[in-house]
Image 1: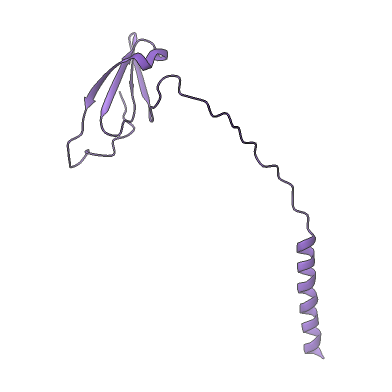
Image 2: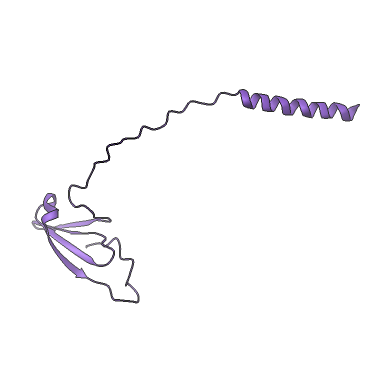
Length: 108
C-alpha cells in the first residue's frame, strides 16, 4: 500500500505542477517599435571609422581607419571636412609586421 501511495503522490504532484505551469499568465511584452526611416548619414564624411582629430592654430587635422594606409585631412572648418586637403602619410610594407590590419590611428 505504501508503494501505491507514493506513486499516487508523484502522479498528483506532477499533474499539479503541469497544470499550474500551463495556467500561469505570461507577461505581455510590447515589442520594440521599428523605425523605418534609417536615412541618417554622417554630415562630415560618407565613411570614417575610428576618427581622431587635433587642432593646431586655425587648422584641424583628421585621421581615420582606411584599412590599407594612413591619410590625413587638413581643414580650417570641421563642417567642411569633405572638401579638405587629403594626403597619404603612410603606406604599409607588402609583408611583415605592420603590413595589415591598420586601424584606429591617433595623432598626438
